[in-house]
Amino acid sequence: MTLVKVYVTYKRSILNPEAQAVHSALTRLGYNDINDVKLGKYFELTVADGKSKADLDQEINEICDKLLANYNMENYHYEIAETEAAQ
Image (cartoon, rainbow, N blue to C red; front, top):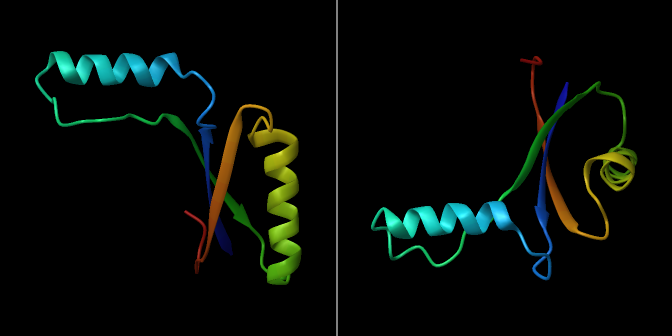
């Protein structure tokens, strides 16, 4: 099995009120050394073995483009890790 970890975050130009609220709360709690907070989504996809790296990359990019990330507002990146058994 192959484990794919997908990270989706807002583009720099997009206002993220949730992240701003977390940053404000951290400041109020006295954590004044925190300069910025990023907030996003995390997905784990378990994929059956048998695909080439190029085919897997193409499939994951299609999944991210069509479903997991909004192209207009978000960026994504992913990591591919081989696993012996899905958990």
